[in-house]
Amino acid sequence: AQSVSQHNHHVILSEAASLELGCNYSYGGTVNLFWYVQYPGQHLQLLLKYFSGDPLVKGIKGFEAEFIKSKFSFNLRKPSVQWSDTAEYFCAVRVSGGYQKVTFGTGTKLQVIP
Amino acid sequence: GAVVSQHPSRVICKSGTSVKIECRSLDFQATTMFWYRQFPKQSLMLMATSNEGSKATYEQGVEKDKFLINHASLTLSTLTVTSAHPEDSSFYICSAPGPAYEQYFGPGTRLTVT
Image (cartoon, rainbow over all chains, first blue to last red; front, side, top):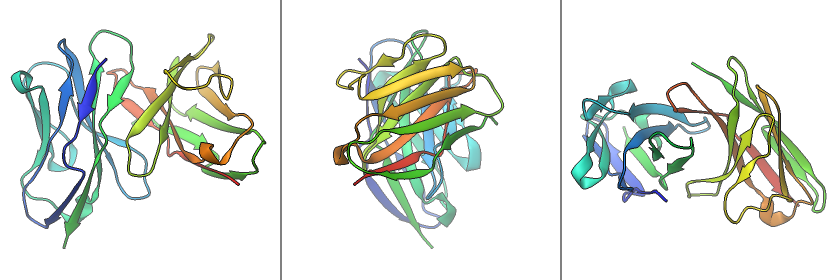
């Protein structure tokens, strides 16, 4: 069964700092990869996803993620964070072509200080 | 985008009673819906997959007789927590998959069992 690791549990940054959140998964086959965001008091929303093609994926609000197959990684990045990016971020993996079940990482809480 | 609603948003019940939580896809049909449980500072734990017109598929360790799932129509799935106990207190979230396997999440239901 696939698993997802997010190594950063809590990240605190100042506004305008660059962000990189790590995500590693364990599964040897083809996967679909997602990043979801949960803003305070709101429900989970899709930030971006990777299915195939260009391993650098751009999402909403200036976020991007790079799929590195050899490292089983799908790190989330943003060059300059804003206070409004304060939220919890979840990486998720789905085995391609199979059952629709998605496995989530434990989440990273990002706090951006104005 | 697709919208998933949940009702109620929060419920308090006494130990030993049953509670029903509804999950609706508002502007699309969902033959499959997922039920998650989210513990504080932890990730989403998939409890079961709800299948329209057939039995739900439960994850290992989830008691099917305690967490009854019914997917009565293409837009409605219900989770009934039977004979609730304080340890069942949690945040329950449902989701429905979109056409590209992304998940659309409901806002969640906070269950407190006293």
